[in-house]
Image 1 (cartoon, rainbow, N blue to C red):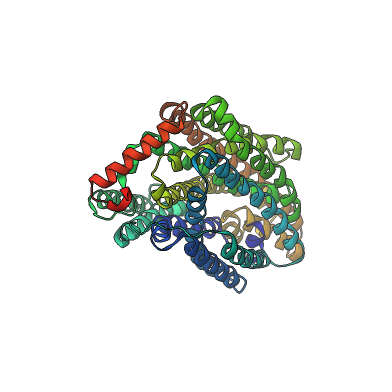
Image 2: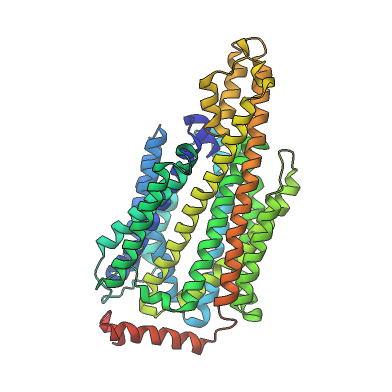
Length: 511
């Protein structure tokens, strides 16, 4: 992201849209894609998703504008929506109950592998090539996945899966878009402006309409009866909160490491590896902890560790050492590793096996909605405080005195207030062009002020994320079961299957 900021000169809100355009489409189509995979074949859905994702990655290499990148990222979200529910539903159908928890733990741990390799490989590429090069990497990965899938993945489907729900899909996407637009644009439009409040109101009304439609539809994309199961609901809520915290905090940290601390993309990638490795180690082993202490204690403890890590991160400064940064991030990574696999296993084991695709899609939707909201909310908190603090600095006579006529140019103010990336670019241009005596001093002052303003915004953003993580602790402690035996899991799944049969949905389930 910082490299894209430097090359394209994008604003803070455009950065958020580059990230959230993908997650918006991803989250909006996950349930529909999961249903399609259940009906027509999960392996086929996975392969179609890989093809679309690969085409999107190829298209991204030809993009040269922020809006173009936002659009292509949205297209990639279609492919991602087909891939994710298929992977988890395939695992759920392939592995029996006693092995499923371990398999899901390994599945969750692969996120740590991707998290470790992604920044590292990306940093190496950015050291020598343009930002488009990071999208080229996806193409051989997609090709390998397509070939391996043909030989290694068994076919599975649920022919009695309910019909598609296009109205529900449109309502969910437009509702999420309205909420995200209002949250991302709030720092620019004003939190109490007509546009912001109107966007929040419209998004909320559309979300209510979505819920009402799903309750009364004969073929809902999201069957609300699933949420009668407290275990299913609490596990999904925990996942939403932890991904809110993870996406929001990583959005802040990556820019902090490059723009504030001054690391290059490669240096940043290397320094993110311990974080990803910690998650990769903890997530697969969380199953053992669950066996010893139970789901409730494991997930609640994980959320508490996430909260602690976020609070520690909120005390970082512009002069913090890497050791100080890394130790705080390790708490965050370990906590996430404790939450993700047990919560995901709770979601999947609380449903009938035939509904694995739907359960996987709901699980992935909560991840993406949580992540999208995390970037939108935390990013907007950052942008608001950054603009306020830097705006105060522009009133400081010290900076004004460095410019001819003792006046800071309005164009410079506009660029700098757009985000720390554009402020850094503006300072670099001042040094390079040297348009007036003292321009180097002005550049140093601007850069120092933008770093201080960013750190202030990041601190508040981390504390907001910590507050959300605390809610996750409370939900897990109150509603997740202390221990759930295999018999209890089967009973819950059978009860839900019977409910489906009584209501006329999936009548062939008993067959």
